[in-house]
Image (cartoon, rainbow over all chains, first blue to last red; front, side, top):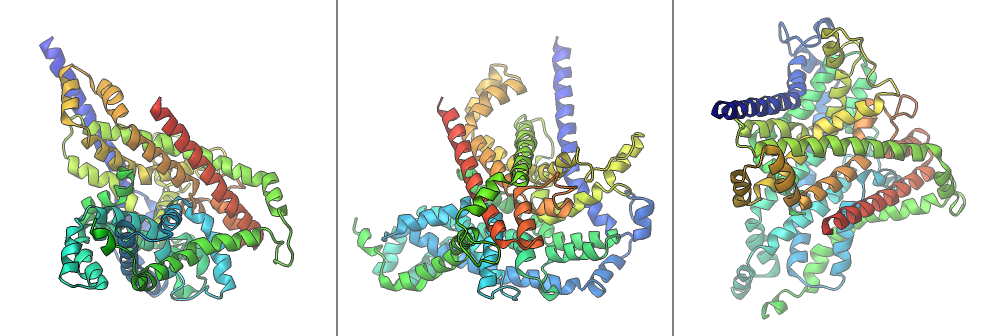
Length: 280
Length: 291
């Protein structure tokens, strides 16, 4: 009886660990495969898909830069992210501050309009936004994507800031007000620094969203010097259909910055990406 | 109470901050909707007003309903695959038997941060008939290679697997966070009473996670109804129309066939359908919670 019980415990222990280990490996392996396959040549890849590179070479990467001109795509992606993310943070902080602290006419309507932005399936805006930008001559411009990227990330960011600021004691502002600080000073110099924890969450969400965004970049910009990395990938695989390892190197270049960021801030990213859900 | 005067909105800040930002939002999210409603009631080329003709055509459009059906099927696979498996894995984390929990967490969540398009390309390589990892595995056990993405019979399964693979981590972390919020006393009490892992999970953890579960379900369903990037990269809706989804159908109409007004009509139709499904879902889940 005693021996039996300990046997089941051991079986359960081994089974649980084995199952979860296999599961983790299945999540990890395609990414690891992508990383090491990018170091193989096409010839080696077609001979054996799974083997490790016998003599790792960076030829796919140098091709991506010299022939594929991926440098310009990296620049576009970087520029979009660097411009959009700070603007998302500042704008959503301001709106979140107004929503959580200030009563004004039409606030309910505005809250509802921003909330509905979270509900709209983003691809339902794909055709409409194209139509509108075409109408206004805003297509195919270095800064075309900035506006949609800001607007699409605002709703979630606003509600993260809103609920965070609601948790800050109002006495801080009262004290600042008594000391004669202006509205601007109070908002940006007193409250804004307190919001640092939620700011980093918003930053992570918008960096991921902006860097990885595909469909709007596909539709709104057509000229090749404006391609972001995801668009570069579709273009490249359309042009060089059989250059598998070249494409894999492109995949690595697109995802490596994100993976490195993830390895440094994994906990922050996990809580950030699930923040909306856990709060309900 | 004294603070209410302090926090009244003054005209200055409103005009300086609130209104400009709201205008940016309205310009990029609200205005396009109005413009596309305008487009959807005009003929191709926008020369004349045609009333609801486009909508009538949409209601009769077999391809559109077929792509909605595909969306619903993929959503079903994803609910089972993402939410179901994620819950199972998260429940293993509550058994205290597991080693290296931190590393598992990091590994399982990693695919979530990848760009959807990277996932799409990575999996289309793994699905490759001649060079793919999956046919290589089949070859090891001497099974004929499979045309994963080019066979209408399998393609819906094949495009769902990468979606499931990528987003399991998200739901896993959501459930894990929810489970860690359950009070330790309740779990210990059930253990002392001799509940097995299955009983503890099914009768103690699951009922206590009802709210988290309904949020996860709604997230998963809305997420899969708008799926586009993965499909665009892997199949483009093909072969034929067998993996067509609504977003891809709207894209094809508006951009491949340059039918902007019909594309707008599909977008509006998609918006309404998604809203209806989410509304019905939250009613259904919410109603189930009260019983």
